[in-house]
Length: 141
Image (cartoon, rainbow, N blue to C red; front, side, top):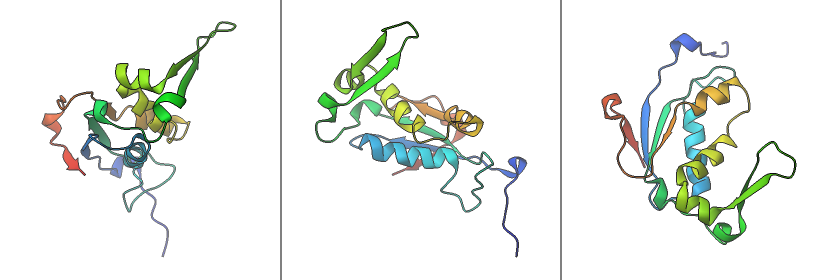
């Protein structure tokens, strides 16, 4: 018996909706990253992009446990000397909660072409409304 290897033309992509209300940021990011990579499928092949589309709604109602809101920072550099910027997560969650989830998921996805392609299939929304009803997404708990 030989090992099954999925071909890119054989991959069937589904659409999933996840409601982030009351869910922890890290645990939600793991679930989303697994769906984007396709690790939940029995036909998962590491070198083939076999992931699904994921829509995450109500990201503003996501929670961080412990003292992460006050102690955790998001850092980025502008490219100029001495221009390291930092934003505390309480500010980030108040202004751009979508960015907080995208950063968490991006850190769990491989840093290669498969990972970059997978991140394009992630759609994050602050509220409960999204514009992908035509794709008939499946609701995940």
